[in-house]
Length: 425
Image (cartoon, rainbow, N blue to C red; front, top):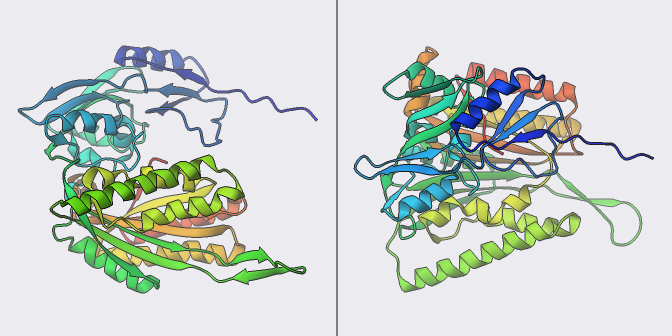
């Protein structure tokens, strides 16, 4: 039996905007379309089709300028948000919205909109962008921003790279000390979906002075395990569980600092063990890592909280899954939540295509989304983000079933005046 030959995609590593221009112009004479990566290409066992050419911006990672008077920072698109934030920290500043993983880049986050657990206060990442530089599909350099070429500005932001390659951005910052801003977690836990959705709606619409907020729901399929003695299997029940966490400012004490240090070490160790233990043997540890995010620590710093998922859960998210995020107007929030849950749960019951169905949600108060709504002749309103992650069984959705799910999601968005969110995996 012969081993199939896999042709890896060509990869370009530009160092500046001029390199990007040359790459785009050269690609026009080739049949291989360009695919842009802000950082390293995905390494989760996935290989891009060999007809694609990858443009990786990971070498375009410089912080170009820091204007302390205006509280803005100019960066290349491949700069990681975590590195930018660390540089800003030396001046008592920080980014108001960052992704929950340390490898997310400024250009990558801007291309999808960018949302976080602080979005109920600060909106989307693209709400923090003052202006940007880009290279269009014809290889021409352009600039746009809040006050010039605004139509083009809004067309490029959140377009996933389809309207042009973002090469540099100017970002707003806020005065904050993330390493010494201490937060205390107010958590509520739920065993039924109705109570969880009702409470989430209350917190999304009235977040009070919460610095961060997030709700998580997990719904598992019945688990079949082999009997310890004899033939056959035994079926265990489902697990349905939710938690809402609101994080509020608190004054640090010696005991809180010690508690935070112990918790941080435990989460890092759990994440490292889960990452190093593959296959079925590592499943209990990966499940424990996922649970560590469900049970948000009682006390932690703002920087800890922003990257909590990065610390413990990335290793537990291995395996194929179907993901979707929806920005739901607050007036339709609960309806969208129920309809999405019913859609995925119905497919699981009929076909067994999903195992674990999980949801994450928080509020989003974004000037960009309000403008998008108004442009579509919809009420300019605040939103709640609802994301579902459905683990696949065995490894892929049949095309007909995938079409049914996509059609169902499109109908929910249309009838509920909602918008899809193209997140970074």
